[in-house]
Length: 449
Ligand SMILES: [Zn+2]
Image (tube, rainbow, N blue to C red; front, side, top):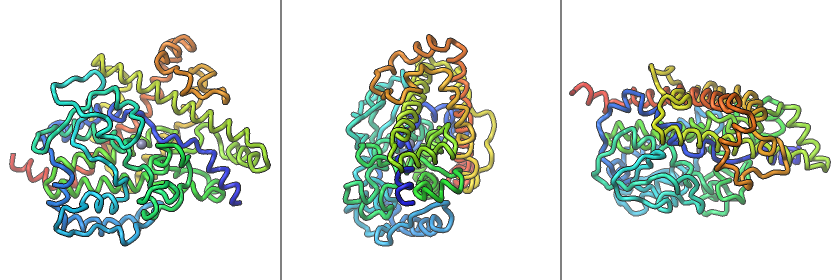
């Protein structure tokens, strides 16, 4: 049983990024929620300043929050008591004390900055990707404009939240497990990494950015590790921190924490983050695992390679199409229209993260798999001997799709991506509106206006 578990663990293509640049999928959503769009600009504040100003209240809040997590989450690894946040009245180690209490990478840089959209330019001092990310590879951060903010500057809510939605991919969830070879991973209480490759630089974040809530009982029975995922924890953690910051009157951090939680909702709109191998049914997954167990690992290697290639090619296509739409200011593009809010969203409930929010992309996993298979070149999605990312195919991907499957195929891809983004728009707006309706500070302000 143990061995089969292990083999099934290997079956997950734990690519830890979903939509490569989350600002692309969050900006239009945020810009069309009236309460975000119309909010007064917030005064920028460093993390230390926020923590020091609220130290006592934060101690009580995080304590109460930990109890809430233990009682309410689908799966949770309780926080070891010695990590609890203690108010000391001193700024010594305050960022590390906070990082330990919320169990994120304490090397996170927490810079004050904005990440602009593709094609957007502002006359502001730049900030380097290495001041933002703890990773060695900067990915899309290298090709967008990043501008510095200083304490006391004013920034719009749309800008702050949009920027923050990309932040959890820049090192926040790296190295949190006992086998991650970090000092903090050993004390955080998450145990060994349940799946994903601990040797890949970004691989350790996978269990925080993927959540498998809808598998069959037989898969859970054989692969208990499938339950050990933490996006629900992260969404609740940052949603509640956002509400706390707003209640304390520290809007900048209210907006920023809101964006961090929204990141994980964005991940959930990608089928590759809510089911181990989209397109595979339970029996195939088990059969492939079983073959590995009796000494034929090829089937599982093939399955992982194919899932990984499909995941990457989907993400490449989506980011190319959307970057271009933003650069051309093409708000009418179906992907951007799908994110545009016309009316208030479904009323948010805590249970929705598992029952609704992660379900939508799960239900579309098979359709997506079919569309990729029909529209993408076979080399990219159906050849397990190919490592797609090494083909250097990204640059000409849009053209290649047109040549392979014509405008119909191209549009089919845009349609299914827009459909996934439409789900994110509804879920994201539901989450944002819930935070703002809990926000007494804002409604008091509105009463004064
Ligand atoms: Zn993510």
